[in-house]
Length: 307
Image (cartoon, rainbow, N blue to C red; front, side, top):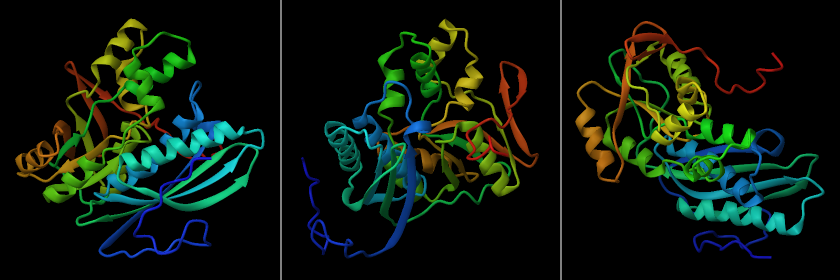
């Protein structure tokens, strides 16, 4: 079996009871779990599941402005998992880790009825961004356009032919780490969150934390997603706000700091995509083609079905 490459700055050797490392500066850490029965869409293979599990955890660190450094990977595998599938899962996790400058330094292995992948990320940061800090009048912006995961998942669930870009969005998602670091370093961001639970839910979380509301005056829909929605009679507003697992960063910018933030993003090859503003009136509204649309809260919330 292919082994993980071992970083030289880890003190204890591979296979020891714990990992030891020298660490200076601000530590940023996050943990995320992928449950096969609920988080793996039809057609996703074990390599892609390993990739997605790591990316989803790294995205949370990225939303705080952190650089991922080390990964702890814990697996509870279905007993029917084949060795080849196990190796593919490890390969996907390692490739995703390397993509964002991190190394796997340990973890755990166990057995469960459904496969679960728990990923803990250890990272560092010079500057951090919180969910708190939004004030009415702040600019609302995102690191990318939305709707591809909504369209891609609809395609695989309904056996509809779709553009490869839509399928890649659900099978090989990307985290916005360089964008997060640039945003944090700019000094102009008042709050930031990743959009893994959907753009709508992310806006409600920011609104609740800061006792504000949001008006979205530009629908940030990806052209591929918009075409798919038109071709298949789907609601493009639903595609943007309720897709989820897109791992874009949703952030607010202090008044007068827009140019500074835009320049910080341009230095890492990213774009400043303004979509609206924060308001004193609570709730989330969309101004779309002259209409005011109330965006209801329909994003992913854990245990909501039980409640």
